Image (cartoon, rainbow, N blue to C red):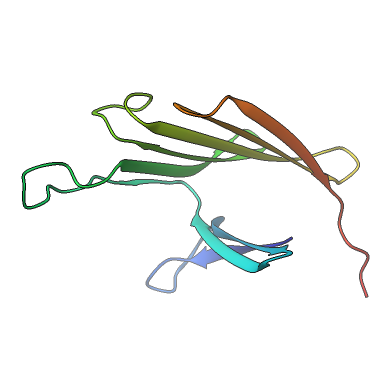
Length: 131
């Protein structure tokens, strides 16, 4: 896994501003191949499905957000088929990232859903040696 962040130091007019991390890019390698994902930090989003030709909601609602909670970066996402989260057919995922005192990255992933039991996994990463 490799992680990159975009640091913004100027506004759209090129004027200096207080720097902030705009987004985070996560590259992961699996036995089946690689995957790269980019997440804007501080943005809450979602998708509300439309109606199909029969007037029936066509697909689940989806929501996501990536925010800071103190020194922890929190990724949250959910999907549900009824009017509100946690109803109908639904699933939720929460991933938290924090640095340990020794510099290791702690990633805790919690998932739950209407057809899956709750599950939490904690992974520890260390920085690869330079070179």
